[in-house]
Length: 432
Ligand code: GAP
Image (tube, rainbow, N blue to C red; front, top):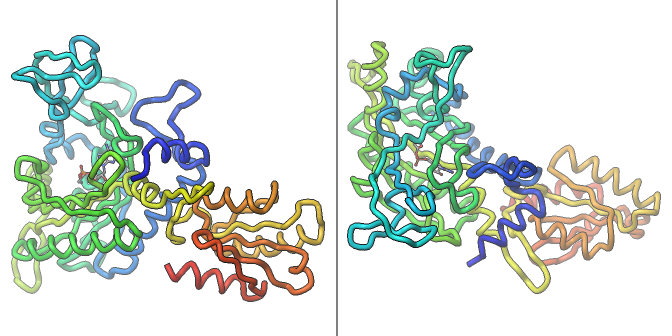
């Protein structure tokens, strides 16, 4: 099992993930994604969108605002129910979720200073509060969305009226969500700002169980497709479920700190449409032409977190072989697909040919250029960020119009003609 500290160090050293606001001492629970991390997250989101929206006729995507009318969160139950039980250690003043602490007799044991104490348990709402407009009073209070789903439910009718969707159908969204977590922890696993990829899939109530099973299966397959092996399913007990859920199965990954949820699939029933219908006074019923009746559909919701998946991908890919640190990322997830090296940095004909290869490949893939130091070091530097293929242009290339392609995992090297190089690499990348 890889040590999380090694992942954190690599992420910082090579530009995947930086602590947010670092030059000002950081801000707990917030991270910035560097050039490579941004590419990794982008690839994950694209592969999700590809499977959930692009390849499906019955799913459309939307993008809703982060701040919504506060009545949305009153209706969804987040204003009253989206809270954690909070306790504060009276000695070191560190705050914890009550469920995180062990107890001795009736006393909590502080995770920080290990002392035991009794205290009242307070409810702490996890939504970030802000104000809209110039006046800070009750009427202008607003919240940063704690899940992207809210924006989907309130647009249910808009989407229905502007598309030809018929049940079963889905509305998908990728976007930021915010939770004022009491105890952000485990690097980017539990943060206060993160991205969700959510699908609300509307079905006939009597088909909800079948579609729930269908989506659990689909989503588990997707994680295998991403190359994640240490995956397990975990059905939530009734007392663990969110207030809107009739049934939830979590997809968990075995991180260095233990199994943790990367996605939850919930049967939300008609909880949300019913609540928004009640609170808004607007009819949100769906007229089923087959059944000739109007009803509130049930919703199956696969909801995944981009950063948790990215962290799982990094943990799965990390390997050390002798002196090499390698990220064995599947090519489809690798930030750069190809690195291009001129053998020497001071030989004009080499640079010229290498530049033309680089410019040509760049139209097709994310490609990086490196001309510093010796070739061995350049290979190692690319191994560490997961670049699956390195292309070297040497003196033979000038005569024979071919290059060396070096494979990251096997270190195998083959000569490939420049005129077929792009197709060759494309084929290799698509094998994945
Ligand atoms: N709409 C349903 C919903 O929000 P959730 O289980 O609370 O369900 C869904 O969140 C996913 O969002 C989780 O599986 C996780 O991947 C991600 N997530 C939730 N809270 C997070 C946090 N504090 N930091 C990072 N990711 C988080």
